Length: 422
Image 1 (spheres, helix red, strand yellow):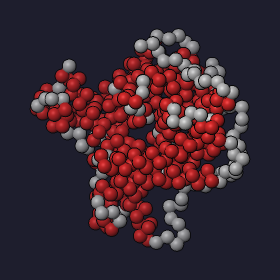
Image 2 (image 1 turned 135 degrees about the vertical axis):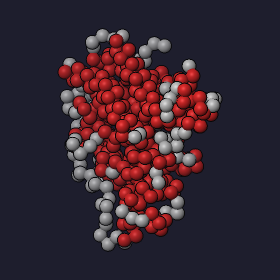
Image 3 (image 1 turned 90 degrees about the horizontal axis):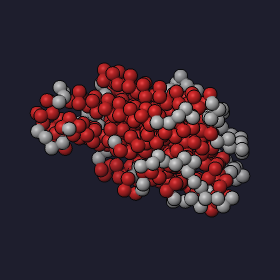
Image 4 (image 1 turned 120 degrees about the vertical axis):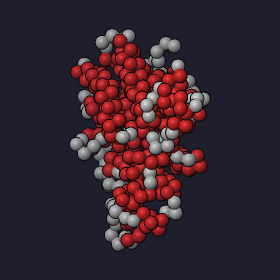
């Protein structure tokens, strides 16, 4: 019981402050214990942190395996059970889930190496689920199975970052997630996406005629994004940023008055540039483009930035929850402005914005953004980004098409899956 209380406290501190700022004394205070007493249970701070990550990994693996053991071989039912069980873990032990998502890359290499085996074991469960579903013909054959699996897991994991239990019933979230996953994976949207000019890549690293000071500032931001991605908010030091940028630490103050200002500009840039890139891509569409075509375009543009500038994307999604309160409030405002772009796109995909502001559409929007954002965590140079983009576009269109058609026909949407009984 005491050990569990320590781990719960450590998970909370790790989630809120990051690896570098998780201290034995703070964990002891939250657990209402004396600091030295923690060493009865853990040999060191790093042993305690490693156990937090391992506890979360073992818990979600066991929870999903137990849920799968209660259902038969039908691939649809097994995916339904896995989605519900994974979300149940994320929602009920959100501090452990967020601690792992936000901090895994900040852990010492030897700790990461020991934890990789657990991650692979859990990944194997989902690989088997998707492989079986694909073989059975349950999945849309146009989808890349690997990309589809990772997009689904990304959408589910992201719920720990945005779900507010005080504003809704978790059963509604589970039902919405099951319906979203089902439609995204099985839909055969009968309207082919429009063929439009390719999206231009995000702004080039160096523009013709650009001043040296502007280039230097960008280099500082890119270096800071890389360091913030690896070490988190608490572990990011100006000396490390300067070394990454190939500059002297003192020269950073020419561009940014403080470490905090630099970090805030990095996370703000990740959101602002993504929004600008999406809006620019939308402006290139003809007036005849359908609402679903516009969503296709937004998906592609969002992924274009995520996959071409992963340091900014990952630094932002891993660290926003660990920023100081005032900085986090300003960052949330920037995120809300970008979220409004997606809210308008989804509203337009339903007659007269019939679902505007509804919990259902809010959840769909967050599932989509979670799936897209997390691609920067798992996609790499070995994989064709075009495959990821095509799969994401198809899944989002498939997930939205039933809602659009049902509302056009005046039919009330019901979840494809119902959540498990309490």
